[in-house]
Image (cartoon, rainbow over all chains, first blue to last red; front, top):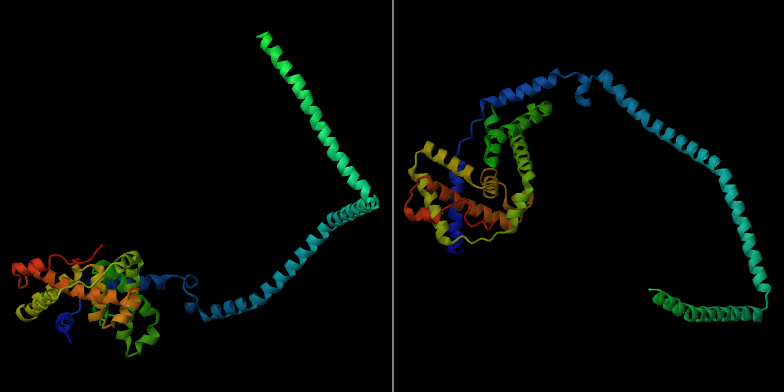
Length: 163
Length: 186
């Protein structure tokens, strides 16, 4: 054991001796009065404001029995209420759901008809249509560019002359 | 209640160093005892039960200020020098051998009250409640090393406080124990 450890032990022993020799601190005289005061105030409370453990047996037993019965009762009532709620929601949503379903069917039929029409068109026609559309766009772009180059500078010149 | 009120109050006041708080805690201890009066009345362990409840309620009360504990628990190291420990031991030796009993008890009580919480609480739990280091660490939620360091520093600081109060107080000892919080890096 090192010298440091020996000093540690000696210090611990001395402090232990010193502290264990200390007498108990005297509790304030007010402590007993305070405790008894709180107990008296609690005793003055009516039984229903105290904990259920201190209720009279004639009240406690029916309350506990009532609680025990109310648990399955509340469960059954909740299930019944949820069932009723689901039935009401279903009946109120029936008409809008039918309309929605019919609209869906109609759109589906239209889609099928459009698919049939597209499938009935020869492949070459479709390619030709795409090429023709592209060409038309090119022509349109060329016409717009030509119009702009012809009309816009003249308009600018006329504005300059006016000022 | 009269048989145990001093013991309950002492347990609380030594941990809190605050007589008003200790009285509140003691009141709560006796109210709880009253709730279990039927069981306690015949039990031979009523004293132990009251002491345990008093200690637990006091520690619950103190650990509400947990941030302070955590702050102190983050920064510690045992940097006490052997000369400091020897000097502290000499002070306690002097207190035990040279002072009159009443004066010694009064000074020790005052020195204990003046220790900072993080040193006084583990010191009281170790020496008065005889709790092992590990139990103190678990109860306070701090490391074992921190508990050991705080208890050691608490002893040295207490020696310093006793020296300041004039116990065998050569000037060099006063310089060695300038403050109870010496060595706390916070």
